[in-house]
Each structure stands twice: as structure tokens, then as C-alpha cells.
Image (cartoon, rainbow, N blue to C red; front, top):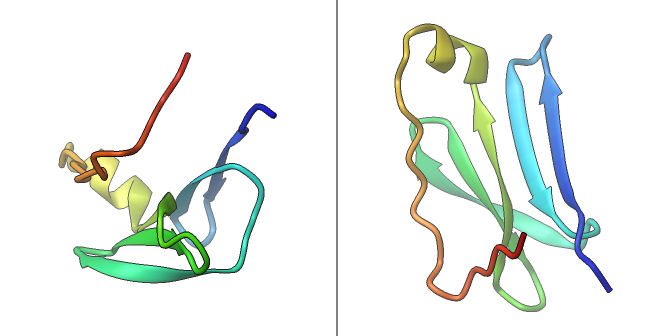
Length: 76
């Protein structure tokens, strides 16, 4: 089964979210600077991330760098 990448932006809340695969029970790990990593409760693997104040960051041209787990596969 192919995984779907879900990308969502809420302009009113200025929140950007990227999720890989279907939603699963998960928790958010605060990485600092309004960036949160979505962790699957069962597998303990990263399944996405959320960035608060996203538009404010892009207006100020601040880069967003996220450290990804070694076992993350992105296949195109």
C-alpha cells in the first residue's frame, strides 16, 4: 500500500502540518522554536511535523531545518 503525504496549512492559526500516511494515535514532541514532531504511539516512529507561526517565518526568510530520523524513507 502506498503512503500518502498530507500537507495542510491553516492561515487563521498560521499552522503548517505535514503527515505521512493515515492518522494514527500519536503524540507531539516539542523540538523548540514552535516546531513539533508527530510520533506514532505504537511504532515510536516520526510520522510528520507541525510548525506554528509558519507564515511569520517565511516572511522573515528564516530557514526551517528539521533533523529527520535515519530510517525515514522518502521514495518518489
